[in-house]
Length: 248
Length: 248
Image 1: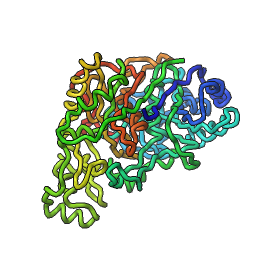
Image 2: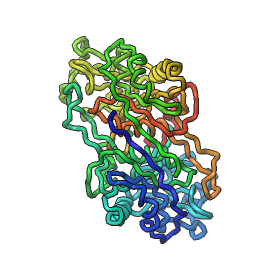
Image 3: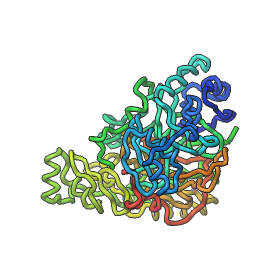
Image 4: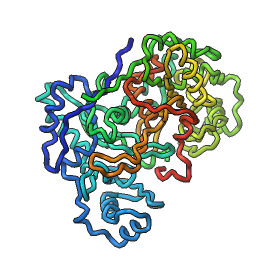
């Protein structure tokens, strides 16, 4: 039998607060569980919270436009204001839905600003630089664990054409986010075309199956995936240049 | 520790030829491996081949337009002709790339027509009705296995906004393709919004990590995912109605 793949939920991670040293807090949860060769998938929420990317809505003064749009669609104008501030570009803004491009180049609903899993009158934004966050975590764990643990930071995105959100990698450290089959032949000797797999996204989608949204499991280890070591630029290279985007 | 998830490659499946009884051929590969609660992910290629959806290019007479376009972009005009025949609508056709909507409503490159993993002068098309194919397989295995084995038929699709293809579910039988968190609260008691996970797609993306493209592993079992039993319409309901598609 060919070797399989395992997904292990990382449990015991306490509620993370702004300024918490996430690497130190998570290390005991990884020690004794993580093995050389594993990949860690981590929901961005805990990274954002540790990095202070939680916005207190009571401190936000919405613009007139945010007020107008929020009242039309039954939204919180302060949250709309944060969404607009987090957006580099608005792609769609209708029927109460905002699809934005973030400063990172990510295209997602509400520029990644989310009230779920965020305490009280707050919203949670994406990390400032998720690739850098992933690198910091991976590097900080390298010595105490005794091996390199690639880190993927995930978020759940809606998609063109298909219903249902899936997890994608918004930050990647220490591994190549792609598996490139170009130049390889299939079993019939015919070259594989158009065959760059978005492995980091697939790993994040897989990890979601054990993390869930309500179970309080912010991370999962993937065991058995033959990742290729790679340094920068991480998840940033997964963003398709607009001029090459024929799928939208 | 919360329970994890395992992905087991299904090996020993021989090369499938048109008219082969796929259910009978695969049954011995599943017996002794599959367990109650598992989900089977199956690449569409073996389904398409068994169903005779392999087109002999030597029998295809390309239209003048297929000739013209193929010669401009260095493609095989016979293959272009098949792509056009398999398309319900062409969304983009430029720079040698065809993005089409298939009769199933799927949006993908080349209407799912693929030369890789197809022997000789042939191309492989998508199954006529992948949901029906998945149902037939799941139903045929139910009695000999002694339990219901949900079947997901997968293909690798390119995506808007992001580089890298990932597997999605084009056929689904015996399980709900979504995990619906709407109405549930997060750990802070705040209702989860916009939280319908495309679990069938995530399961297919995960399975790709053990199937690969070149390893000759056409299927994988997912163990440990708490799927919800559901009947029709399967993967068809994952297609986002155009009027609700704000992500493209």
